[in-house]
Image (cartoon, rainbow, N blue to C red; front, side, top):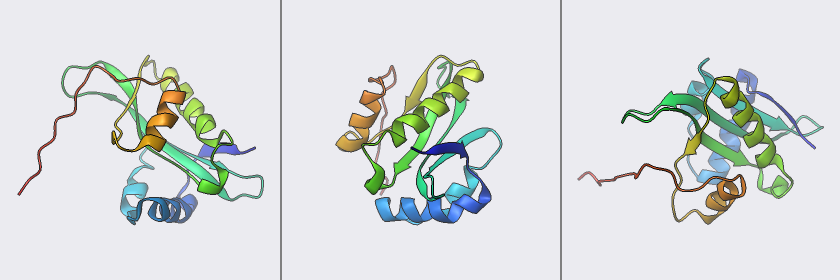
Length: 139
């Protein structure tokens, strides 16, 4: 099992390393920003104190007239610990925090080709929402 707690500055090196290993992009400044007080940034650690995964999000009122909702910005689980409920446990704690802030919806954006993360969020009960993302490549 894992323990879930708020992320701390001392976790950032391990968080950034896990994310860089999984995404191929090192972005320590981004993870530092996730420690902002209005955000929920949680880590799961093993009984030996190793990082098992993390999740980050915040409550936002979407810019185009949507009501406030909890937004999941990122979730990563150490591949060696997947399929053990770590991601679901992190998601459940984040959702509980969103509920404490009074919101009744959770949202996120995913790449439609990323079947792993799509399957994860669908397993959490998430379905396509009311918004449609529009995109344009800039020259």
